[in-house]
Image 1 (tube, rainbow, N blue to C red):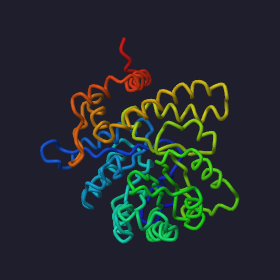
Image 2 (image 1 turned 90 degrees about the vertical axis):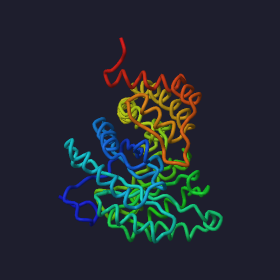
Image 3 (image 1 turned 180 degrees about the vertical axis):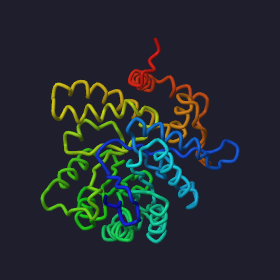
Image 4 (image 1 turned 30 degrees about the horizontal axis):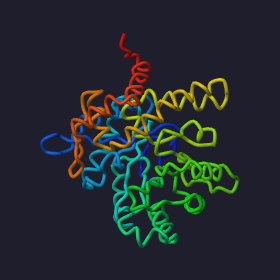
Length: 342
């Protein structure tokens, strides 16, 4: 059985099309120390629904954690999956940092801790100097991917990268030139960009990946366009909404793929897509504090983000919980999980 990357993993954990959840990092309320038992339990909850974890990403408040804390979370994620028998489900780890040097260091540390894949955001602190410097942007991902013992995914999230928005040409070029890059997460919400990259990936000239377990996946950063991008050769999404409604988002992916083969299922796929899209649009406005609040309201755990992120006010909590988009999503989630109220 092939090892994943060259970091000594003895179990093949392929990177497959589907749904991934950027896992929140949960903290103890009084100290803001890591709450690893809660984080692990949440990872297991999502994984049992077929949702693989991405730890140490934006939702995971990676930039609020030390290197050592990131490693603890990666190790906890791997153990959480192994403890429920999901030995072949991969762990993706966010390894972005300010400099190329530190990003490489964090990526290597993540691999040693058991991460199967890394996802790296563009360094945005000096966005004014980098945004229009295509050679420098490409060199960043080239250097990181070539130095990484595990495949690396590009994370395009302009709002968290000083406004740097990688276009479809540069992402495709990096895919062609860097065989250890295993995909892209598009949290820019640009459907045209998504379809252009997804088309490029299936062309005969697209460079084979260094690791056969790691094809180049084109993934959304929101779930509100999952159906149309599935029909455009897309590979799924990494969506925060899967933390709150894993059964619903898993069902949406199932329906999207099934509709490709049986068009009669498209209307049901679009019905579920509409519910998810409205909830994604509304809940995303409350960011990490809102997601943690909703998880706590629904599942009994969640807590606060690390400061300086502020918790929601009581009025904001009431508004997001009672919002029709939230309640429609939870109603469907309860139905799919068998917890519908009589």
